Image: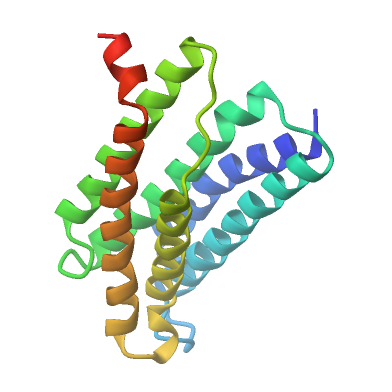
Length: 189
């Protein structure tokens, strides 16, 4: 097994580990740091670490030629689940700040993109990520980290603006993805 795949598996394992402290009553106590409970702090730190493994496994896979079919399959799933868990958690904490409609836009886009990728794989082609998708991912991660750490003491509107920019690029990248790959979609109907 490659190092890149081990990091992807580690990210998958970290997701339930990240969630578990939220259910431990003793960890609901505040830590005096950014108004976070122990459980919230653990969740946020593990989210950051898991996100960094995503950057690292991609770098290692490309640099050391460790790109595998397993990695192509599991890496995007691990990324999507990690982001969705954080979004759902934040939506539960503050449904006004992270509304369900915004989370649904992200979920719908991810299912659509995954579906198109599966259709492309069936046709023997691989679809690369677009610059819009990369900007969507980066802005989503920045917004999530800011929100998980209670904005690091800054005003919440900074993370809110970044979050809505991420939603905008979620829509733009989804439409771009669909338009660029409409042939793959229509050939399979």
